[in-house]
Image (cartoon, rainbow over all chains, first blue to last red):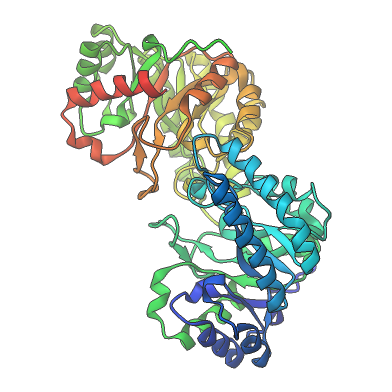
Length: 270
Length: 270
């Protein structure tokens, strides 16, 4: 297998890796370290964000996040739909063609109901996303997050949902942290093929002490990231690779040091 | 669907629900509360355990646990094999035909290697288990336990492994806590059919604050246990249902109260 390695030009810094920093600080750090892509989160966006990113010479790999489709009432559903349409517009405004969907957790005992609600929510969002030139990227999350974050928990499930739509409209994100345990991961990465709209890396710490914010920097944990990256590359994906390490301990690092470490660990371990 | 309910005569008290108590205390509690089955763990067994259980009029639903097949050296593998053969003999000595296998976690970056080691380990154990009249029950664990506890993380995977052997020799355990999130769970329970050798219940707490010992009592969490129980029953399983709640907070309850609560919650929520 021809291994291109983790090319520096594919590295993207996902905002959540430095949730304690402003978008401006992240953009500055990336520009001065030679990280060419950034993956912002919506809660850090401001009116001048697109111009700020562009002026620094960076590009936006994706916007996090839309989704959270299962709702407890019609009113809540309408509110979510409107917010998801805004998310699509914000992605377009940032010049990225990818909106990451964290699909939402269960709102009651019936996971199948919630999964059907996710599919219906995506169906309602697709036309507006198409108008805006933004593809929706379903991100399966780790099964331990099924109640709070996402009833979509395997790449097989995300693929099956995405395949109901045209390839240019709905795809998937492969986040190593969420899917590395899956016995079917090779098959499902190959199946996803051109629908892969993003590849995220971080590491699984042993022991994991926090279900939501206990991720590790690449090289500190158990995931064979180069193996997964090669599978994703083989499937035809050649886009940016986002480093998304959600761990509050990283906030203790000065911004510049954190950005340096992301780049160094990406090159050595992704 | 004809729902028989969680019949009292199927209730089994898994030892780990009361790891702070001796087997004698658990047996006494079950006998006085009318719980007919007990699921002991090997670390609580003593020479007189089988007689103790029998004298109290209880039966053993399964023995926990064999497994932990992936090893770092030949010596370690031989030691594990010998220990697994002893586990089989202990199960037979307790009068149960079921040894639960917790298959073991990854010992390096390659999950496929570890999974192959599990299969080879089961192959080596089957002849002795057959001689002793004990079936091996592969228990898939939650994917968050893939490094420390089990590289077998889905029922599909456990079924595929079990199907390499005669149905009477190798089967699966369906533990609600470990598999409830799985989009394919209905299909895989039906597929398991006569290979289902055990059904375990507890609940998924929200939030889950501990990956290994943060389970809830039935009714305190998010799992639709009656739905899973009906699927397991439909698949043809009519054996004991083990309550296995691993949570150190339960150790604060006096033994009698804990046993009462297990019975009450089982009848109301399983």
